[in-house]
Each structure stands twice: as C-alpha cells, then as structure tokens.
Amino acid sequence: MKLWFYYLFAFFGIILLRYFLLAGGAYWLFYFSANKSFVKQAPPTKFLSWQSVQKDIFLSVIAAIALAICAAIVMTAYDSGATSLYESVDDYGIWYLITSFFGIIFLQDTCYYFLHRAFHHPSLFNFLHQGHHNSKNPTPWTSSALDFPEALIQGLFLVAIVFTIPLHITVLILWLITMTIWALINHLGFELFPNFPQHWLGKWFISSDHHSLHHNYYDRHYGLYFTFWDRLLGTN
Image 1 (spheres, helix red, strand yellow):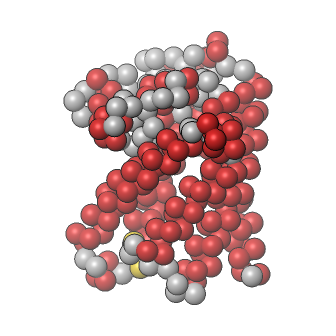
Image 2 (cartoon, one colour):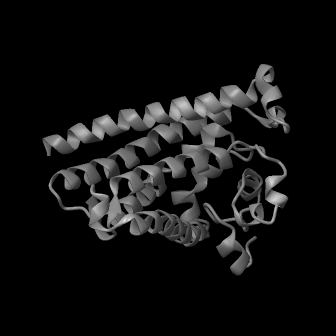
C-alpha cells in the first residue's frame, strides 16, 4: 500500500506537469498574437474567456487525480508481475509488437465511441461529461478537462488493457504519447493543417474541426481517432 501511494503522488505530479507544459505551451504558441505567424488559420481568440480556461484547468487537476489512481494500480501490479506487460521483443516478435500498437488504437477508438455516445445520454451527461462541454470553443487547456468519473472510466480502460492484452512497454508508452498528442491537437480550436480534413486520407481521422463541432452540436462526431464509427452509424 505504501508503494501504491508513492506511485499515486508521483504520477499525479507527472500528469500535472505534462498538462501544464503541453497545454500551456500550445496555448502560448498559438493563442498569443505575437506567435500567430506560425499558423495559417488563427485561433478564435475573440470567443475565449479566462473564466472558461480556469474551469478547464480546475477539471484537468481533478482528472489528474483519477488518472494517477489508475496509473498507480498499473505500476503496483506491474512490480508484482500481475500485468500482461512484457519487456523483451522476442517474447512475441516484432510483427506482434507493431500489430498490437495499431490494434490497441483501434480498440480504444471503438470503446471510446460507444462510451462517448453513452456519456451523452440525458441520464448520464450531467454526471459524467458536462464538465468537458463547458468550453464551447475548446483550447489546449480543454484537452484534459474531464469530470472525475469520466477520467476514472477512461483510466480504468488502460488498467483493463494491461491486465488482459500482452503489450510491450514501448507500445504502452507510444500509445500514451499518441493519446496525449491527439487530444491536444483535437482541442486546439482550429485546424493546424487546414487542408488535411479535405484530403481522402484526412477524412478518416477526427480533426480539430470535428471536435469543435462536437462541443457545440452534441449529436455528431463521437470518435477519438477515426471517423469510421461515425460514418458507419450516421453521426459523421
């Protein structure tokens, strides 16, 4: 139990540091007028309010607690050899390592789509998901702004994966990095690459435009990475 508390506080600090460095850095880079020459499409700063940003930061701190709890569970279990994480590529081979990364991305996207739709049900929305939608015009600060129950559910998905599916440590780290960067890009509030969503390949990925629309129109764009399920089930 002592080790679990150590991991809890350590990961809480790491998650918060990551959030303020990445979200704060992106906000500074793209939302301050002196830096807008970096992007072709300027962020909609006239619609922003500092009160909304403060709410996002507060929720992100709360969400960090939930995610730290799940990370502490994973690391404590890993230390005792109870997880399905492995360290040697030779255990399953290079092809499994590559396939497992893309497989876990698709699995997460699938689970997220259906959970996300469930979160928008009137009986669950206020309790699970309303906090994230406080920002009608998302910014980088919104990327981790989740109600505690939603953050805990998303964290428990990670816990379930590491206990059931063999994953190389490198794959787990790359997955977490992908998740973090994707959330940040989708909450920029503008398209970093404005022409990509119209490209034949770009049409299959959830972009910042998709997610900005979702923050205002709750009946569309529930995907995390891909538009596959949105297209298939009529929410694109």
